[in-house]
Structures are given as C-alpha cells and as structure tokens.
Image (cartoon, rainbow, N blue to C red; front, side, top):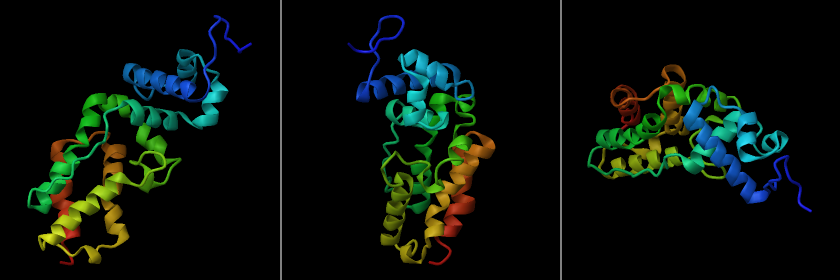
Length: 199
C-alpha cells in the first residue's frame, strides 16, 4: 500500500514530486516574494515532507532558482546583429529586464545574494548542467563585432569575458533592480571601453 498523508492523499515521488514542488514554489514566489518564501510552506502546498525538499534543494535559494528556471520567463535570448557592437549589447541586455518586470524589485530581493553564497559566479545565470548561456551569448556578439572590425576577440582575456556577468550580479545585489538606463550606462561607461581597448 502506498504511503499517504493525513488527508488520505498519496505522496508523490520522482518526477511527479519534483514538478509538484517546483510548481508550488513558483506560485508561492509570485504570491509572497522571496523574502517570505519558506521551504515549509512549499512542502505543505506540494504535499511533500520538508526533509525530502532539503535533500534535493539544500537551501531555499536553490529551490526558488529552479522554480524560476522551470516556470518563470524563459531567458531565451535573441542574439542581436544590428551592425553596431554598442547597440547589440544594449539590445541583448535589455532582454534581462523582463524578469525584473515580472517579479518587481521586492519579489526578487535577496535571491541573488543568497545564490552567490552557494554557487560559482560564472554559473549564476545558467541553468543546472548547462554552460553559462549569458557569457556564450556575449561571446557571439563579440565575434560579430570582430567580423565588423570593431575589436579583436583573441585579445580579450577570460576575465574580460566574465565581466558582464559580474557587473550585472553586482547591480542586482547592490541596487536590486536593472533598468534600461542602467544597461545603457553599463554598456557605454564600462563594456564598450573595455571590449574595444586593445583594438
């Protein structure tokens, strides 16, 4: 006989359990935001034991991030090719704004800071078991710029290639929001001078 909870409902297992937990986590994030998001409430909504959640997601930031990746706005980046490195960067990073617009500043507050405590910087914007999609996209934009003779890609160090991820993480942690004006300032004041410095 399958184990049941006090209401007679069968406890979920495997993929069914994971989907139920992530769905409950996503709905809770939208209702209360990250600060008031708790593993206990997610477990209650998903009809799951709290220790089971902690075995799969060691901290609430991991569970929240996975819920966003599964049910949130898809970071399905389009790689612009406008004919200008500056405009390509502005258009590309402007796509990040949609995730902030969906949640609002208060709802995301604290999530990035907590994730920084447990995962490497270069993986922050990547889905589990995938490469850094943000950096990969930036590299493609830079390769396009090289083809237009705007820069020399081979002269850019790995540290420089990681720069956009570092900057946007810092912006979220310190300011808790990214706006169109912020993106323009980052591109004009930091990224363009750095990317084209050794051309």
